[in-house]
Image (tube, rainbow, N blue to C red; front, side, top):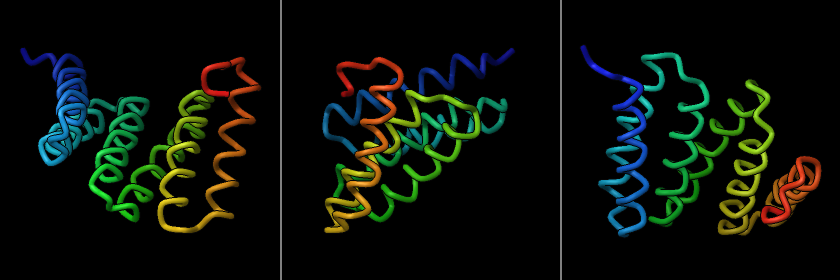
Length: 127
């Protein structure tokens, strides 16, 4: 019997490891596997993490529009499942991506929301 939750976690971990090594294409491959499994087993939080990690990988490749697309999906899920730390992180990632494209007003809106959430949840490191 397959342990899909274990596979999901392993794919996410491998994607993050490849991202850390700078092999973003391989990271994207694993994050897409993570996303597929998360959807298959109905793990919304895992799906959000996969979207966020995909956004980060694309951001590292300089594909900010694609990064924004994935970070927005991550944010939507975080709001849907009321995961405030994930919501803050998604807003922070969106802020960075929008700033990279020169959309500073939009970037500031997301970064201010990230800060607001960090203060609200007592995340001093995030603050």
